[in-house]
Amino acid sequence: MTTLREVIRATTAAHLDEGHAVAGQCLSAVGWVGGTVPDHPALTELPMSDVAQSGFVVGMALAGRWPIYIVRYQGFMLLNAALILSYAAKSKALWGRDCPILIRSISMEGGIGPVASGCQHSMFTRWPDVRVAAPMTPLEWKGEYDRWREHGSVVYLSEHRGAWGNGEELMHLPLVPLRRHSAVLFPISITRFVADAAARKMFDEGYAIAVRHVSVLAPFIPSEAALQDLRLCGKGLVIDDDFAGGVASDIAQQLHAVTGAQMRVAGLEKRTAGFNAHDNLPPDAERIKQLVREML
Figure 1 (spheres, rainbow, N blue to C red):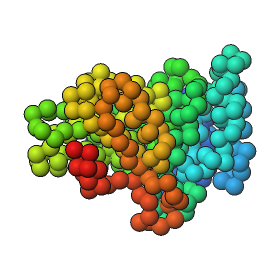
Figure 2 (cartoon, helix red, strand yellow):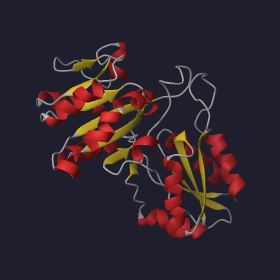
Figure 3 (cartoon, rainbow, N blue to C red):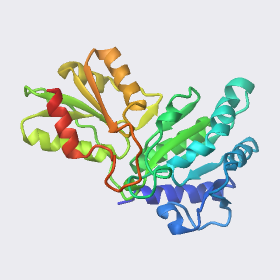
Figure 4 (cartoon, rainbow, N blue to C red):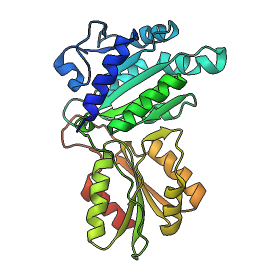
C-alpha cells in the first residue's frame, strides 16, 4: 500500500530532479515535514520567522521555477498570504503572465498553540483565481499536482497531518433510500474519515446516510449523483475542519440553492482553537451522529 506521505515525497523528488523549486520552513529538520519531503540538495530553506518568504516564492514562479511552497502550519498563512493573493493569484488575469505556485499548507489540531495549528483554508476559497483542494488520499493529491502542472496558476492544498499515513481512496457512500431517516454528509479535510465511520454506524442503527466526499473546495462543483441523493432525502450536513462559518457555509448555501434541501453546517466553534489538545476540535463521529439525529 502506497501512502499519501510516500506519494507526496516521490512527486516532490521528481519535481526537484526536473529543475523546479521546492521552498518552505524547516524542510530538512524536525522529521522532514512528517516524512513528506525528500533529502535533496535543491531544497530551498526559508526562515520561519520571516513574513517575506511568499515574496521569494512569487519571484521563483515568475522566473519559471514552478515552486512548491510548503507551509508547516496553516496558521502561518495569515502572515504570508498577502503577496500570494494580491499579486500571484491575479497575475494571469490582469497581466497575462502566469505565476504558478502550489501551496502545501498543513493543518493539525490541539496542543501546539492557537497561531500554528488548525485548518484555515476558508480564507483562500474567497479569492476567484485560487483553486483550493483538501486532498486526503494519494490519487487526490497526485491529481491536483498533475492538474497544476498542466494549467498553472495558484493552487492551495489544505493538507492534514492525520491523512499522511492513509493509503486508501475514500469512496462515496451513495444513498440507500429504503429507510425513513436519511441524510447526506458532505465532509471536508480530516472529517472525511470520521464522517465515513459515523455513516456506517448509523446505517447499522437503521438510518440511511450517504457520504459525498468533498476534495475540491473552490471551485466547488457537486456531482449530479450527490445532488440526486440530496433531492431524495432533503437533508444535508456539511462538515469541516475549519470554522463552521467559512467555506462549509458557502457550500451548504450552494447545495440548498440547487436542491432546496435543508442544510446544516458543522466545524470548529467560533472561538480560539489550538491552545489545548482537547479544546475546540473538529466534529468526531459521535458529534456527527448527534447532529444528524437532530436534523431528522
